Amino acid sequence: MAFPGTQLLSNLRPKNAEATVLLTWVSLFLGELRDGLTMINMQSIYLLIAKKYTETQVGVLFFVFGMSQFLFQAPAGYIMDYTHKKTAVLSGVAVGTTLCTICTAIFATEEGGNLGLMIFIKFIQGGLTALIPTGLNSITQGIVGSVGMTSQVSVNEMMNHMGTSIIVIIASVIAYFKYQDDNQDIGIMFIVSPIACIGTVLFLTRIRPEHIDHDAARGLTTSSETPDFIPSASEVGATKLNETDPPPSSPIVKPSFNIGFGQVPTNNATGQPQAALTPLEVIKDPILVTFTSICFLFHMANGCILPLVMQTLAIGNGKTGILMSGLCIVVAQLCMVVAAKTCGDYSGKFGRKILFLIGLFIVSLRCLIILGLLHLRDVFPSTLVEGLILSTQIFDGVGAGIFGTMYILVTSDISGGSGRFSMTLGITSAAMSIGGTVSGYLGEYLADEFGYNKAFLTLGALSLIPAFLYLLAMPETLPDYARTSIATNPSRQCSKMQSIEEVEDGDNGATPYQEIV
Image (cartoon, rainbow, N blue to C red; front, top):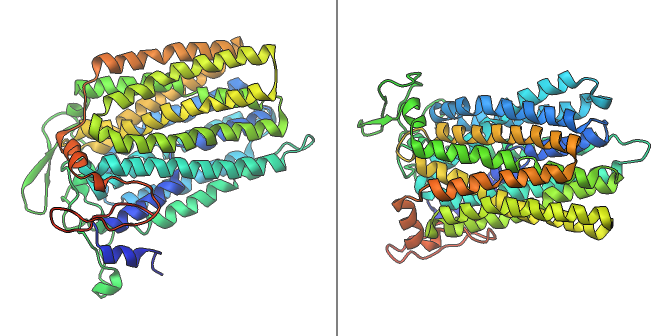
């Protein structure tokens, strides 16, 4: 059965329109599975309230999950640079991390009685989710090329956050009505995970091998050379490339474990050699080293703020607290949709740096406001103050929303021409994971030992370090080709996501794809 809207897309015949629409739907359903943190945060509330875990025990699980991501993300990027089975790998990962979430809900016992098993499950889940950011963005760059990353990453992030909001709302409402004072087992809310997994796999399997240019996916070229229109198997007599066969425009490559000596040659369709940088050459780039440090420091400061806010609202407030915790995520995710759209619209015009700085500095402002509201709640406890604490998630949406979009774009900028985009993204993502891991353990420890006020004060102070480091040490990374493509082709920017329009191109009368259903 044909995917709805495919015939319309075929009539328009825009560049890779079918694949980008499918990619958009993948991003929507992948929102809950993308990095595990959404349901990890919900799992922490579940374990604290339903299973009577301590903050320190939850912090240990965050630590193990983050360390596992850290260990596996750079190798995951290396794998995604070489494999031609990108969609199959990402589908398998989605199934695996979903099973880990379900196992957590089923097998967790009271007061961390089987903490060792939970640690093992979080280690496996962290390793699996390490492949999700590199997998999704490798597929994205293989479809649209580096030139199209600004607008497409913006759309991907918008749909990710929108999907997350929908999933968390459903889970929170289920938990709210399921919760009883004498029966606090709300594990049924995790039914949303397999639903998201099914949607992810369904649309991933509809992205065909011909849609992905593996040269572009690796960052060897700036544009994707996949065909403008790919007929269905029935239209070409049921002859279809298998995913084991690379598309005609892709290089024939073999994995190289040559760490630092020489280059890794590839051959494109014309027979001309192309060279990917060795891993050692990649990690010696001073700009990448600086940016990786910023990623680590930002997440060390920011990673545990959301869980701590959720805990301040959930603990002692019964099922209302659970609902408020879910709303923390939803408010932030909806604001991230707007932040991602803003990044897509303006980072190509005005550069990456100014937007990135806004996202970095807003974390310290957020912590300062939360600290003031917690003091106010101690003096005048009320539902109004609880609502004001919840509203600070708007700042989380702006800060994390900008960072989540811009770090992918900056990584793409830095890795352009290296042939190591996924590996570079794995390195920056690994830095984020280890930063979030340290933050999770540090934040939960501070909250447990010294109280939530001092935890927010410490994290807010730490957040100033990456902000000033980016201000003083990072150059503007926006490449000329990305700036030109946005400035001269504003109609190619993704906008309202309401319909598919034909937009007249003044140069050749073509009708490039503009908007996504």
